[in-house]
Image 1 (spheres, rainbow, N blue to C red):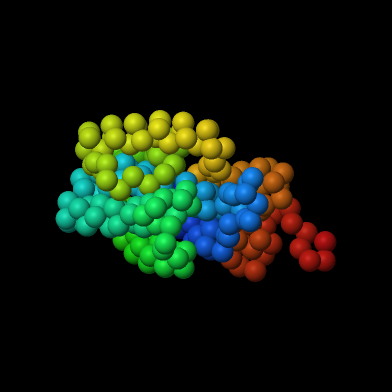
Image 2 (spheres, one colour):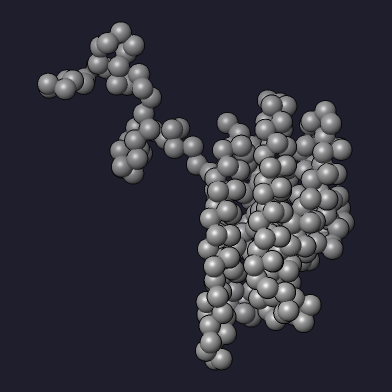
Length: 236
């Protein structure tokens, strides 16, 4: 089973929730700890940057080669992803005190981010749905590949580096190493990416132990009004 479509739905929901938390974060007045109130912003920036970079590395090439109008749609998505990264870079610049963003109000910056995130998510959903529809038996689990790409993706926006082909792969690798250095130096919050898990495919024992049952309906009723074998029913 390809986990791309359900996994993407969960990731998009997570990004919106983290954006909501980030957009209400405010700086502290303590001069010794000026960024103590900003972990929510760092968390959103890292999550959004990682997912965007991983989509460029995994989904876009797959769409380009599998979907009928893939090359044109891939080109449009790359352009949109750059716009999203530009908006994210304004958050980063404001957070770290860049002179280019210091005079711009947070409300304006977050408004741009919300607009570009919504547009990016909409385009990405359309791409993965069509990619899933064009899936071949020999294709890998694109959702799993996307998750693995996120683990090694840059944790900050890089709108001006190459995004596709060999130059894109090299640029992302270099950016990830640089980001990792600064993440460590700044003690930055970098969450793990989400990994979709199809709970209904767990065995009965696993579901029981996790107290998370997702058993088929036919286990409760055989379709003819009879309980499954071994179930004493409501009066048992």
